[in-house]
Image (cartoon, rainbow, N blue to C red; front, side, top):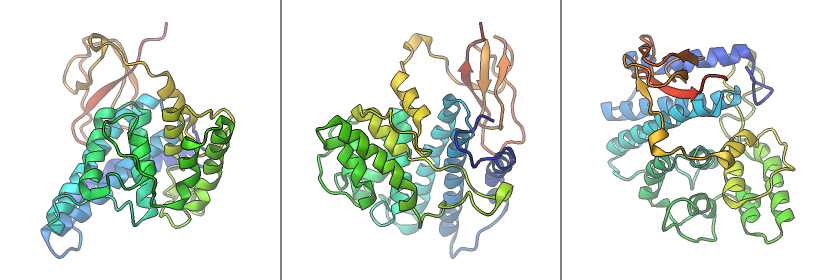
Length: 317
């Protein structure tokens, strides 16, 4: 494991992967105490979404290739849509947001983390789906950072000079100051202040006390990386642990393949279309080599749904 943060041990990584891979099956077989079936469906949807986000962050923290985040991000957005639908049905509020970004700092942070992952992984299709869930609840045009993360990519975003949470002030200022050196300094300041600002978040200090039985998946200010990427801020002076420099480098070097050259994902049971390395989110450490024409295997004991194989790279020369 080529971990990106020092607190993740091999044993903790293995334990958490096992837990995340089994959580969906667990909630299919077990009930939650609730006043109605609608409430139970809503309560069950949230831990499945949270587990998917945690697994995505864990995968990045563990040092896995950036490409392995793609299917997890796709799954994560689908889980948010399920949460929103279940919550809307239970609360009888069709446009309710899955995250209360104005009231709760940790939920706002979760929101900008997911937006930033979509930005840095160049998945505008997923970004549109996620933002729709937040916009429809009335949050569009209310927060500067939310709009600034979107306006370079999505059309018709609003120019607003108000934001919900003070912790984001240095990051917002880094966009608007005229001096480039000051912009870099503000980005660095934000990274330095990021972890202490989330003292009340449920994941804060999760690396302490539990060892290989803990819940730590990583601490990442993905939004700092997204802002640096979107607004061309010099981040060469930033070496803070929470800054996702590998993701920023990926975004800056990303070149979309011509449509005819793109390699689609492959369902289990179908022949491999291109010789090389493939992986599936249905199984931990699944990256392996396939020959062209070889039948892609199914992971029968996975709780993550259908086994889909994703391209991970060419044969080494």
